[in-house]
Length: 217
Image 1 (tube, helix red, strand yellow):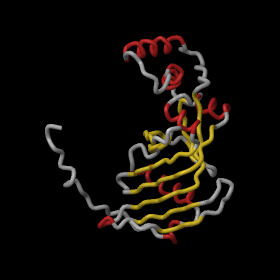
Image 2 (cartoon, helix red, strand yellow):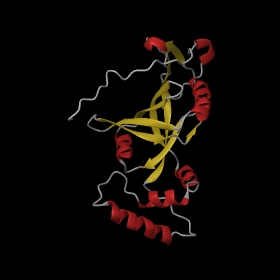
Image 3 (cartoon, one colour):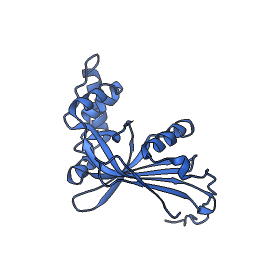
Image 4 (tube, rainbow, N blue to C red):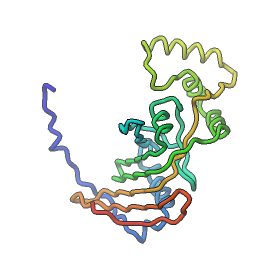
């Protein structure tokens, strides 16, 4: 770099509210829903999350995804099974998702086991997507190298015409995953970097009972 970036001087005080055990409760899903409902009112793209995976060589990778559903079992997202993340999950079906809500000064980290959704569930969601998004998914060989964007755009517009007023078939390589949590960590930014952190853990995805701990900032 020609000019040194002065990163050390970037600082702001976090003024978030306390995160107290009596208010957090014993069920992390309920606390997540409470925080998410608040994020819907305050944040841009509140369902944006970082998905971190590890490949067969133990190399970590991460990217931003969009959460599309959360239920009593886990967190659902969709992608191409042949993408980098899909290949990682095929080798190692464990992952972490991270939500960061800037205005609320809150972060949630969730670690768990990832499973594929059924084909029928994937088809039902695919059919709900906007037409152009369906065509883009039909065309994309996600994460593969392309020679140039112009050729891909040309093919995209050809497919828009081809599928005009027709149903777009869901590609076999496209579908959904559900992350079934084993750990939640809720982080609330506080003044003087003395943050509140609550950790919820269960030993197995078949166990409903969660143990809660407070962590040092």
